[in-house]
Image 1 (tube, rainbow, N blue to C red):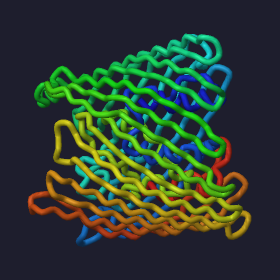
Image 2 (cartoon, rainbow, N blue to C red; image 1 turned 135 degrees about the vertical axis):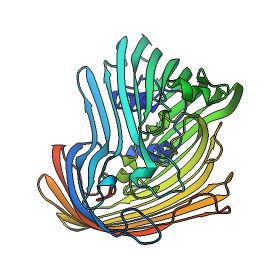
Image 3 (tube, rainbow, N blue to C red; image 1 turned 90 degrees about the horizontal axis):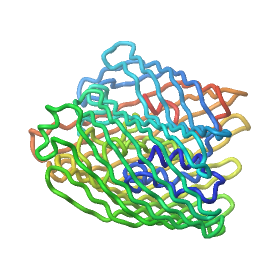
Image 4 (spheres, rainbow, N blue to C red; image 1 turned 120 degrees about the vertical axis):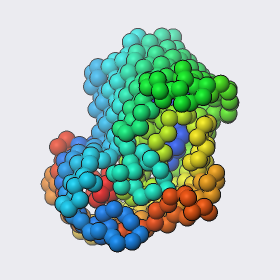
Length: 480
């Protein structure tokens, strides 16, 4: 589970003998594939207060008879790591309250968040983890991403780690974790119990090898819902075992994991290879290439733990699936098998930043195959500093998704132009955004949504802790 990975990442920033940071049941998958590939570009250092006003030409995102409306927002944005003598914190996300002036039924809390706290250090015997992740899941990915078709999914985890150090280069870690996944609208809540062990050997301060195995049990909390999943009334199990090698070679960071993943759901046991390859290469003093590929089983809860603002650190839109703050995943109870590949390039000059990111993925649910999905994403982001405190940014993203079992397709385009003026502790941004979605289906009984929406607005961010650098974090109005 990535909540553990996030905290281990925070605590191990300078610990060369820490456990390998895949502390959960599987290598990163889903949005994590593109996001952790850009993770080396993350510079966490701020907690901001957000406030804004916006105008939308189509509040309900309908193809006919659009209804214009105004939107006010207030919330918090953060990308922050704190390392203390005993407590390490890692917080990443944006959480906002949206208020529509005319259509109050659309008003809602909105956003995504990944946070973790861990007491103790890996050189000590005992550590305790507490982490939480939440985001917006689509009830039906073919419909418009408005509050009626979304629901918040929350994934919380806690538990102890026991570290047995053998000299300065080897460590055995045992851990036991409890997790709980809650759905805002669907009665699909579940709880999980996970146990595992990891052994790590450090060849040097720049390279290490590790072995890890985990066993996770998921139980549905609503008995009526549990009975509706044939063979899974008493829950399901996921096991994983893998090896990892990680190293830094000059300007290259490299990590490769390989193993096997099994799940027992609905009275049938399935298995698939588990793999993750991560590569980051500084090709010049001003540019970096990054790549990640992964495959394996995941659960609805653990898939939420995707620190998407690392994409913004790479200069791209933080949430590119729709441009309106919606995570890619469908709100579904069953585990799924997901494979993805991401490639990106970032150029950072003294006044100009440019980033290109492409991702391809395939997602297959073990029970509900209706929304099995193959998708591709491409994004371009360019930022130019016009003056020491004034910058302009252009972002474009396109997402294509195909749902083979219902023969349906969705294509979404997002473009935004923003102008930002930075003050001592605040940044004021004016933006214009265009959203375009076209969904098609072979059968007339399949509900689909197509729309065009233009948005303009102002957003103010004020530094509460640290400083949010120009261009860092989600683009202005990205949650509207």
